[in-house]
Image 1 (cartoon, helix red, strand yellow):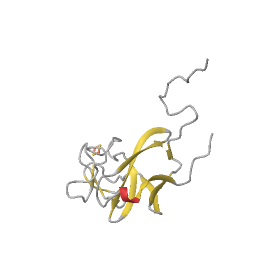
Image 2: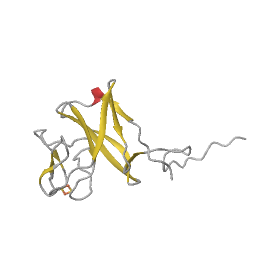
Image 3: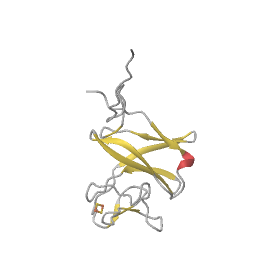
Image 4: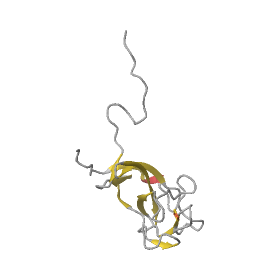
Length: 142
Ligand code: FES
């Protein structure tokens, strides 16, 4: 089995994440299965979590990239309204109980945002055959 990837993964330019604005949603592999994560800027800091509610493992955003409530104070699950603290992902209200969002480490340097894979959360990597589902036949040569 291949060693887990641990090096920083480029996500976006720092300027792409504005304070309490739309999040960047990105593909990862969670426990080897396709899943999605998101990153947003809150109180100047970039935070990232799995796009997966602690109540029922469904995606949180009500529209792609829209995670915050109308007051831009809480991360709100669009399914049953669980509220999470953006700074640490802790549930603060609703059916998520004592749960919290799964955090992803991030770093900002040189005008870029990076995220760090963990044992459970890995980047999507394509082998030489291309992305999954890419079934286009190779061009034949006469
Ligand atoms: S799935 Fe998020 S609150 Fe129920």
